[in-house]
Image (cartoon, rainbow, N blue to C red; front, top):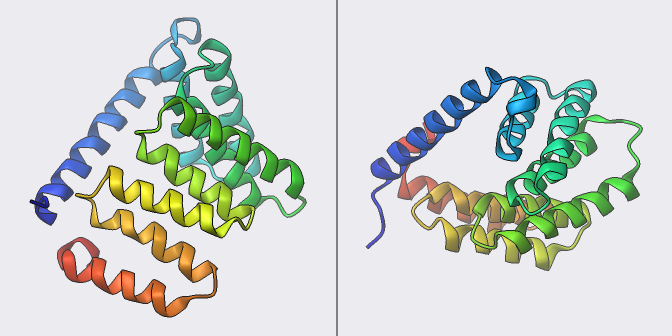
Length: 187
């Protein structure tokens, strides 16, 4: 049966703690010793600490290093797509065509390399939203739910997409379902 919301929250917190510990370990390594996965961790850490254009560009250098070291590492393409997406949010002088093209290419590479990674599908959804490819965005959101059915919050991707599509009633119905399934997770 479905996982209890309380257990899902514990798993989410444990995953987060592991990621943070891995980041801290990577930050202590000399750059010459870093693996592609560790460069991804540094990129994630950099952008989480600094969402400015300068912070995104610094994180992008880390992500580019990761793809140079291992062009088949899905997580490296996922973080590159995420960084380009954030750049589109913060740069008032953005090159929309380049940002759309890069998000499309990077997120497509990530899901091709690891079709079982919900994070890759979530960033694919964001890329398709940016490109106004609504059916594809909804399909990517549904894939996240199939990959992480124990996380009620994964349905919020679909709600957000439907809201952006101008379908607020459908979005609110999903949010209501998610909150009813796990009221303690959203208080």
